[in-house]
Length: 185
Image (cartoon, rainbow, N blue to C red; front, top):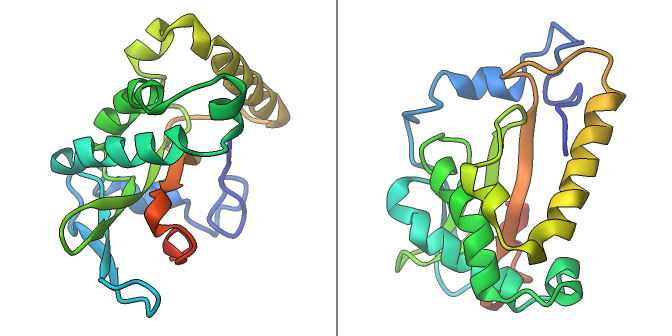
């Protein structure tokens, strides 16, 4: 888990607003859906960075599935996951995130989602379906639980809603669009 540090705002540094404070005003209805449109010289088309919305959910899930299902991701390799497994796991998070206004997708001119980062408030509970995933996901859930527990125990104060921005869920770029810097924009 990733907490907010002083650079991005931290409750222990009151002179700096937190990322969540800055985002919360539009958490359900962002003012803009395009964050950045860029033409990178090494990609033949423009990439638009947009707030994830419900109309992009299935394309974002497909991007995650293609990215993790065909990768050397340790979970994919070690637990023999495939694209369908990643659709099942990521779908519930992506669908929920599409209504929050915190997650970003990279979209080509022909509306293909080629990059994803799912973000949430750290205090957000796991989706209901998370506990219902097949047993093959137990090692992953155990690792995430351990990381979550360690992070919580390292903090002096109890974490409240809106204090810690949790990025990096399912951060990926489609295999065909890797090495172009899409995730670095």
